[in-house]
Length: 294
Image 1 (cartoon, helix red, strand yellow):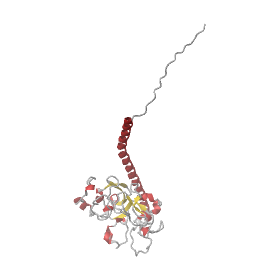
Image 2 (cartoon, helix red, strand yellow):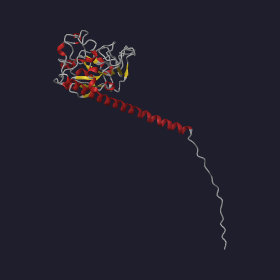
Image 3 (spheres, helix red, strand yellow):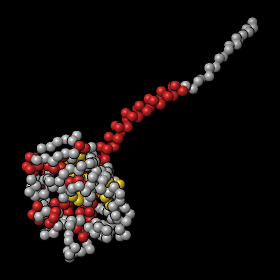
C-alpha cells in the first residue's frame, strides 16, 4: 500500500516592523529631559556634599599637622608674621603656616585646598587678577613672581613660591613678634600657645579667600556674597558649603560653621562674646536666609 503525503501550501505573511513615529520620539525625549531635570539638582547636591566631606577631611589632616608642630615646638604656634628687621630676614616664609607645617603634611599641596575652591585668582606674574576681591570658590596662590618654587616669593615674601590653597589661618593664634603690627591688635590678645582653655571654640584654620585673617566682632558682614576686602571677616564669610564654611579648631576637631556663627566664635583672647550676643551684626540680604545663632 502506498501512502501519498500531500502538503498544503500556506501563505506566509511577513509584517515589516515600523520605526518610532515622530510623536513617540518627542515623548521619549520629553521624558528623558524631565528625568534629567529632576536628577541633576540631586546629583549636584551629592557632588557638593562630597566636596564638603573631603574639605573636612583635609582640615582634619591639617589639624594633625598643627598638633605635631606644637609638640615639636614647645606648644608654641608659628610666628606667621615677622618684621623686616628680624634676624631671619629672607626666611620669613619659613615662619608662615604653609611652610612651617610642610614637614608634617608631606608637601602635599592639595591638602591646603578645599575641593570646592580650586581655581587660583593670582596671575602668572604673582599679581592679583581681575575679580580678585571676589570669589566664594576662589583659591589663593601661586606666588611665582619670577621665583623658583620652594623659595621665598619676591612678590609676597611671607609665602613660598608655587604654594596655593583655599584655607586661611586664624592669625590671632600666632606667636607674633611683640610690638610689631600693633594695628592688628595688642600683643596680649594673641593666643601664642596651644592647649588653651575653650580650644573647641577657638578657630584655627579653615575656608578662606586668603592665607590668613584677623576677624573681629566689629567686622561688618560682606555687603554682597564673595566680596573679599570689606573686612577681615569678609575673607571667610562666604557661602562655600550651602550656608557653612569648614574649620578646624584648636582642639583639632573639624566641623562646619554657620556663616552667622562666625561672629560667635572666640577668635582671640578677651573676645567680647557677650557684646556680640547683645548687639549682633546687621545681616545683609544675602545672609538673612541662613541659620541664626545667639
